[in-house]
Structure formats: C-alpha cells, structure tokens
Image (cartoon, rainbow, N blue to C red; front, top):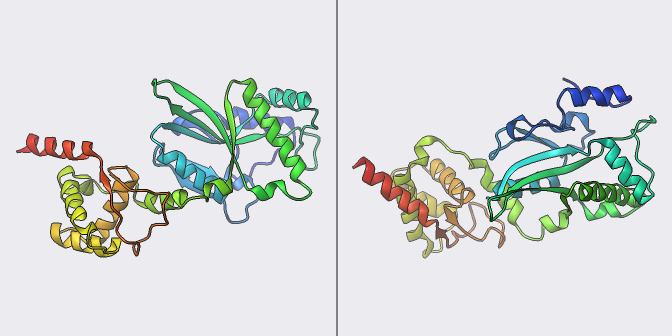
Length: 287
C-alpha cells in the first residue's frame, strides 16, 4: 500500500473502515505511517520489543521517547500517531478556544489531528491508566509558525482533557538533559538474545565474573573479554549478554550518568536478587 492522501471525507472514512487509528497491542494500526508523511530522513519503522509490531516513528525525537516508554516497567502498550477521533470533538475544542481548525493543504477538508503517543500504564494499584504525550523541539516555538504550533497543541490538550486523559508535552531538550535515551538506544540492540544466552546458570556465572572485574578499572570491552575467557563464552556473545542484562534490569547501573560505549570504564553495578534466586532454583530443579 502506497502513501495515503486525504483530500475528501471519503478518504478519511476509508481509513477508519480500514482500521487505522484503532486496536490495541499488536493489532493497533497507527493513523499515520512513515510513508504517509514527507520525510527528512529521520523517520523510521522500528519493531517493538514490548509489543512486537512495527512502530511508525516520524522523528528522531519520537524514536528516543519511544525507547524510554519501552524501557518503563509500568508501560504495557504504546500507540503512536493516535488520531483525535471523533473529529467533531477536536473541532469543538478548537471552537471553545477560538482557534481556526486546521485543514489539509489545498483542500477545505478539516484535518484529523494526531497525538504522538497514547500510552497505557499500570499504576501501583494494578489499574490501567491511559495518558497522551506529544514530542516537540523547543525550536518549534520560534519563528513565524510558532503561534500555529501552539494552537494545535492547545487543541490536543483540551481534546484529551475532555476525555479525562492526561496530556503532556515532552520537549527534545528534556530528552537530552541526560544520556538516558541514547544509552537505551545502545542497549536495545540486544533487548532480545538467543535462548542459549538466556540460561539462568550462565547468567549467574557471567555476573559473578563481571563483578570481579569492576575493581580493576578496565573498560567494558576489556572486562567482557576476560569474563568470556573465564566462562568459555565468545566475546560477541558476552557483549550481547551485557546489553541484554542491562536492558532487562537484571544488572543495574545509572543510565543517566554518562554515555556508555565499549570503551567506557566498566561501571559498578547492582544485581537483581531475583535473578540469582531464579538461577539457584533452576539449578536445584535440574540437579
């Protein structure tokens, strides 16, 4: 299917009939796809780890924020490019604010506005909570188009407020205040690994040897090479395992402190005690 263009009400009705902007989990179909939006080379499709479907991310900033959502333990579903439907509700919000509702370029057709992310989380009481998030750069509020950008964001805010959904603006500058999102991008390459490397006993040995390396002030690469020789695991597999254990929080470091790379000094870490317990139980069951 090629790029979709909205020029008539029939085009919008067809997209709704085809399920765009509907569903949850693996069945969700974002209203906009990468191919539907003019790109400057920063949009990308990314296969989800938490929900295994292709995600349509229209900017680098969306991608970085998406990583933070995937990494969050409380997030259970992420729906990107979520449409503000029924459109009449968004039109009412614009009217309430006294704003002219946006139209598709070159037409008299009112736009289907979208929110970057509709996020489902589970709170401390075990209840599902829906929230809406939009990602922007601060530079979007400079220049001639800034006023119109602000108007569209206000329409979003009022629309979601009327639905009883919390809406917040996430600024690119907030994402880059620490190294967190960029470190997640580094770890996520091995968020999933081969079954052999998921062996509890192997992971326990790996972590024990890695702890012995920390005091020597080696780089991560040097430490992993030495661990690999100790437990007879190839260096590339040690790299995969290290990133996977960090992504899955089986070993814990401060991901906000600095950018991590293989040449970074091997940081001190804490161990998820549940991993050790699970490993010991697994060994007892097979002994």
